[in-house]
Amino acid sequence: MDIPPFHVLEVVRAAQALEATGRRVLHLEVGQPSTPAPALARQAAADVLQRDLLGYTTANGIEALRRRIARHYGERHDVDVDPGRIVLTAGASGGFVLAFLAAFEHGERVAVTEPGYPCYRNTLLAFDRVPVGVPVGSETRFQPTPALLDAVAAGRGDRLAGLVVASPSNPTGSALRADELAALAGWCSQRSVRLVADEIYHGIAFGSAPPTALSVSDEAIVLNSFSKYFSMTGWRLGWMVVPPALVGPVDRLAANLFICPSVLSQHAALAAFEATDELEGHVHRYAENRRIVLDGLAAAGITEVAPADGAFYAYADVHHLGATSTELCRRWLDELGVAATPGIDFDPVRGERFVRFCYAGAAEDLREAMGLLRSWVAENQFRSPAPGS
Ligand SMILES: Cc1ncc(COP(=O)(O)O)c(C=O)c1O
Image (cartoon, rainbow, N blue to C red; front, side, top):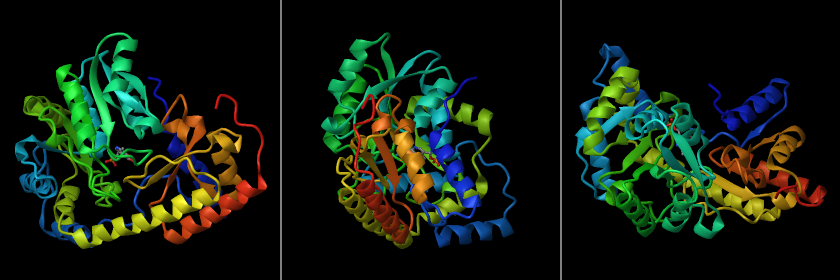
């Protein structure tokens, strides 16, 4: 099976190879928190290790955690969710497998944004579902709209069976407002298109909190995770909220494919919900980091940046620098020790114009990286724009 690579991991490999030679690398490539799981979660894990057998749970996870997640929707979004619709998964990534298998048939077409998180497209391909790119740009704040979907639906082949949205999105950080999300949900429901909403960056927002798709649709599949806001990437735990008709199919798939998600992580995650002070502290730090990176990019003459409403990314148009983003990222790593991710990972068509900078790291590293970029741009002023840009 020929599945495209997740390019960012190749940048990580190149950065690690450089570090192995003794060079210092400033990491703005991988999209993960630079903090451990909350202290309460780690303590809960240590406690449960001592007292519990940690055998299998039901496929959808422990009831206490599903109830706690349901309560979270009530508290944060004023939405009532039946814990019976919640399924714990091996990260949001595990949720994609279940969602794409349960909701779509072989050969069905599913719209994904370009730019967007590459694993939607690659996971759909792995299961013989057909990703259909919806080009989004600054005109629509890097989010899809009904008009863009009409154009895609009219343009090519059979009807769409699904639409994947992410708010806040990776790589851009842009978020959908309530009216925009409602318009997309309405467009989907009128056409029996299944809306899949990736809400993994919920909790990390710098203005008003983005709404959940559950507030505008009972038919959406919502994905979330403990990896980002909860700072628990390696614990491999996420969740999905599925519409009633898909509870049975998802449960059977989950049982057959995975038996159950990590039980140690489920106990830790339950405690993570009580770590609000620590977690909100991370969000404050991301807000400060965001300012450092946006100001730093502007000082380097990189001013076309997608609306960074949430998550911890700046997705910047760099085509005026006269090279492809793959080439720029390679040179920045070699010459400056600054690792960033070329946009080609997120957008197979226009990605060579863009670079994604992750600002989840330490503020002093980000300041240093921005200073290095600024000098580099000043010294390399500049040839003609890259071909095809
Ligand atoms: C938009 C988006 N969805 C899903 C994932 C996968 O997350 P998880 O660690 O929960 O599998 C990521 C990871 O970076 C992401 O950025």
